[in-house]
Length: 75
Image (tube, rainbow, N blue to C red):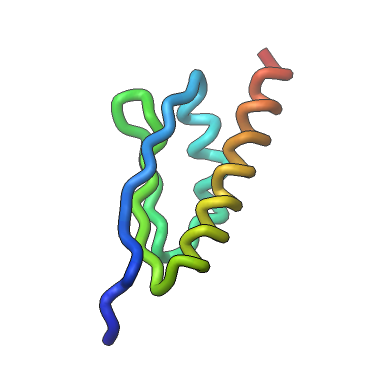
């Protein structure tokens, strides 16, 4: 089995980490693990290639933007 080419961690500070976590968790691929730690949403990921990484992380960040926007409307 091949080793993944892209591995990393993305930490997002947000006013509503649990809301953001709840919004992105159902869409997580098997190679993305998400948790809330110290008030941050933390994504740990591995991908076979850089294109897959960029596309997936871009999708996650779009979901985060929408979650934060919707959450701000409900406050």
